Length: 419
Image 1: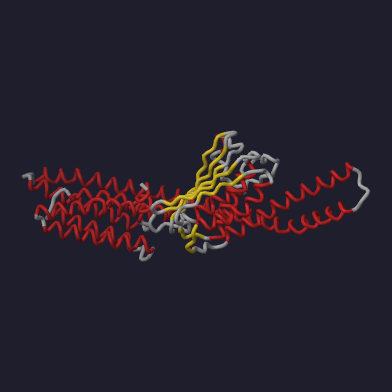
Image 2: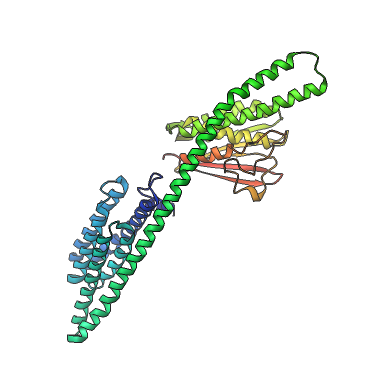
């Protein structure tokens, strides 16, 4: 199933709009059907000695190979519609001169044309051409069966007229389809622009807030050095310091997340054992304050994967810090790396408060409502897991969570060895 999805997504990127994405996917579906059937049909025709059909099958196969190149390279895309004309001609010749019954394949091309053709006139011409070719094949079939004269004309019209009606019906549906797709694309573009503007405002505010927050923290530290404060006054200063520090931490997380996600992937081959061990080494100091042990199980002999080291460091750090934050004191955390045929898998498992089932689907959303305080009342901003998901997906991987309330949580990250 994964291979099929990869083929259907051939040549598709986030930069494409909805209309072009759907065009490409339908085109790829046609190619998938062709490559699933033509080699089999070609082999049967060779075994049965139908060498004329072998030549026609070979021509179709070459057309589809060229079509795959178009999809993969995203070049000469305007030729996709002309390839439909070429394929219809090959199918028509095969049906007329070699093998009756092949004309039914024309119906597939007619449906594909609804999505691929931008030009309405070309679509109508193609649809009428398909109708005429199909009707002519039926004419030859009926004539060969002995039907002649007026009855022959009536039988052919019984095929041709519904086809023409179907052409105009498809044309009407095409108009509705394109209008709907363009409206949806416009709405998505407007939403995207609005989100970008909101993000710019948010990160600008975060950037502008960092300096005054740092100033407040510095002033509070200076005030605390003076003598003569009552217990209540000292508590107020500590509350100001705590609130300001938490706000400053959120601002720093926002800015760091913004810089991290804006930077391009710099992929190099690394041993994940080394990258993760570095994070574990620094995290043990933090875990020690809660008497939490971290058990690290390496992949032997090594787990080489092509990754962005900075982003993977942030991914693992977020998961391990979360595990420490939500683990009960004197518990343990298990970190494990394994390697399979074409992927590396690492997991972080704690024995902490767990996640309620109703929140499992939303924990990867930014500023999720599922955020909670840690076991030592540590603050949580709902950004860490969102960043983890983004980093994982940038690497073409997946992240999933398994959790049981009051028993612990395990995050499992799968990264392909190359993307």
